[in-house]
Structure formats: structure tokens, C-alpha cells
Image (cartoon, rainbow, N blue to C red; front, side, top):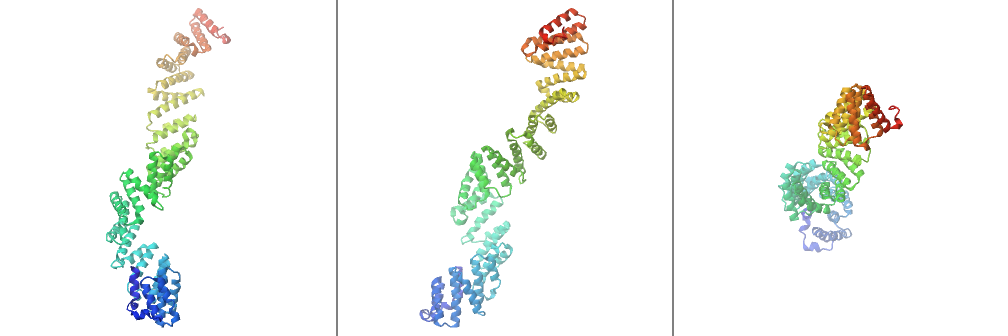
Length: 584
């Protein structure tokens, strides 16, 4: 339609031609017939007629008009020869009244080929006042469009604003002004233009699509859903059908209706030439939740590359999907990608935790490779919902590595330990205390064992073990009253079934009393030890029982009960003749 209006203006001289002129065999007849064919867009016929004029002695005016229309007809066919014809016209007719129009046609040549920068250079040389009919509006529109396609939106908008009152270009100018405002994220201005566009006409019918995009960007998902559904139902803008499916699907997803959203998004991904990562993300998360981890991985991989919070979340789900498949190495890479960025702190926290845990690979990787990572997690997220788990991993890791000093240091940093960690601390303190006693570090042993006993108020087993070890510590230091108190505490709480430890406790208590020269009390304790040993002889070595009788004999000896002493020494010898020198 545009071209018809333009050419009608240019060919007004030919419009009044008589039948005789049109049918004339001379140059004038061929010219008139060629112009009429051009008006009917029969460009090949036009070129066929005009190409014969030069052999028919045309007048200078006829030759000029013939060259002019030859160029336009070649342009109509999309023939590259058009540019050469226009250049020849400008060279041959430097003062022609058609010169401005031909100069513009050179710009049109480049415009039609999408070379907008070259087109603008040519349009800039044209005097718009020299253009006839609607050619001035044509050039203004094409200039504005070229600037827009080159991303020079401010200049393009300035040109489009001059066309708003144009009958030919007013509607499309308002549409592109809305589009430019949309690209610049000035949604208020964009909506003003889009709502003043005639949507029943070409291009204007795409305005509702951009309104849907704006509503979606502004979080008005009910409106974006409503508009996109109407566009899908009408099919008025086929080029945007796929994208309307995406807007509808993602709007439903954001409204919490995932089941209805998914069919739209599957259709979008099937139809779009380059689907948005957001659609792959939603579908990938859906497949992950359904338990199809292979499908989830394929989809989530296609949502990567946006450098956004969505990509960070996609990496988190990818890591979890890889773990479900047993691919620990790929999971580690995905978790690391998720926690190395900080778009969403909660996602980063979860990814960091999963990365640290995956690094340990279920305990198959040496704990030392992961301890720094776990401790960094606690420093960064001291109040995390995962803190208790991480603390447990750290403590258990140190204990598995037999590094109880570091385990205790880690436990001491925990301000509000769980009951499980308190029990772990009891065990750590007990082990440290027993080791320190064995290595002669009696003061440290007493300190750690005392702490363990205090923490173990609800753990009789740990408390009893602490009592037994504390008794040994105090005995070694010569603190016999404290030693006796610890042994007696153990004996009072130890179950009857624990014959070995009860026998040892009585035995050690007897030695303590013996060192205090409380021979009567010591005699009682050694006799109790013998009773326990005899109740379960399989748990007790004969050498220990023999030594117990030696100590009983010693007590009798110091009490000057030599008969009883001799009797006890005899029993000691009989039980263990190989080491009976002392008894003898």
C-alpha cells in the first residue's frame, strides 16, 4: 500500500495518457506502457518496455523518465542493478527535479537490504523539501526505523514522534514509540503509546503482546496471564505464539499453579527457536521433584548462563540431582558454582552446606580435606539451620581422625550445643582424660575427667568411667581421700553385671586404704574384690586374684594376725605359683 501511494505521486504525469499515446509504437508509447506496468507492479514488463526506448530515438525527457523508472522497477524486483541505475541517473541528470527522489531511492536500496547505517548516510544527503507526495514521510519513517535498528533509540523516537499525525505512519509510529519505551524499561510511557495504537492494524496488533510482557515484568501475573491467553486464543500475532505460551506458563507458575503452567512451558520449549532459560529452569525443577533426575539434569543444564539468582538455584538443583544419580564429582562442581555467587543468600547457604558435605563423600574422603570448609561455613552462617549438622560433622570427623584435642576445641566454640553434641563432648573429655593419665599428664587428666563427669549427669556409663579414671589419677598423685571417694562413687553406681570393673574398683580402693595404713578398711575392700572376682572367674585373671590375696595377707600381717596372713599368702601362691616369690 505504501509503495502504491508513493508511485502514484511519482507517476501522475503518465496517469492522464491517452489510449493513442499508450498504443503508440514510438518511444513515447513504450514509456507510457512501461509506467502503467510499473503502476500495476509488473516490474518485469515495465523493464521490458523501457529497455527498448533507446533504439527508438527518445526525447531527452523520455530518456530521463525511462532511466528513472528502470531503476525503480529493478528496485521493485530486488535486483542489485537498481543501485547502478540510480547512480547513472544521478550522474547523467544532476539538475533533474527527480534527483531528490532518486537519492532517496539509493537509501531505500540499502534500507531494503537491512544495511541501516548505509541507508542513513544516503538519507542524510536528501533535501526532504524536494521530495514529492508522501515521500517525505516515507523517508522520515525509514530513517527512524534505521536508527531504531541500530540501537539509537533516542534519535529514532524523535523521528517517530514527528509521524504521529501521519495517516500512513501514525499508528506504526506510536507502536514503535511504545516499543522503544519498553526496551528502555519505561513501562508507564510504553503503555501510554501501546494503548493508543489501533490493534486491528498490522504491527498495532502486537501491542497487547508487549502489554503482557510489561505486566509480567511488573509482577502482575494475573494480567499477563489474561492477555497472553487472549492472544493465544485469537492467533492474531503468530510470531509471538511461542512467547505467549511462555508468559502464560510462567505467570501460572508464579501464581502457584504449577500443574497448569507446565503444558504451556513444554509447548513453548518445543516451538521456540531459542527458549528462555527460565522455562527450562521451571521444567527442570519439576522433573527433579518428580524424581526423574536424568531429565532434570538435561533441562537444568539449559537454564545455565544467565548469571542470575535463577542460575544459582539451577546449580543447586543440579548438584542435588547429580547426588541422586551417584555422580559426586559433578555434584561438587554444581554446588561450588552455586555457593561461589551471592544472588540469593539462602540458596548460597544451602549450596555451601551441600558442597561441604559432598566434599566428605560419605566419610570416604579424609576429614582433613573438608574441615576448613566446614568451619568457614559456621563462621559465615552461625545461625544456619544446618549449623547443628555441620558441628556434628566437624566433631565426628575429628574423632574419626583420632584428633580429640581438635574435637574438644571445636566443641568449645559451640555456644548452644545440642544434646547429641553434649554427649560427644562427654566422650571426647573422657578419652582425653584417660590418655593424659596414661601419658603421665595427671593435672590435665583430672581437669578433663572432672568436666566430663559434670556433663555426664544424665549419662551413668560415662560418669562411672570418669569416677574410675579419676580414682586412678588421685591415687597416682597421693590424694588418697579423693581417690577413695571416686572409687566408692563408681562402686555405688556400677551394675552387678560389670564384674571386672567392680572388682578393679574394690581392688584399687583397697590399695588406697592400704596406703593410708587403714588396714582394716583395706582388708574389707580386698575381700569385696575377691567376692566379685569369684562370682565371675572367667572375667578375672588368676594373677589379679592372686595379688588380691597377697594384699589381704599384707593387711593381716600389719595387723599382726600372722596365722591369717600365712593362710592368705598360701592361697596367693596356689593361684599363681609362677609368680609366687612375694607370697613365699
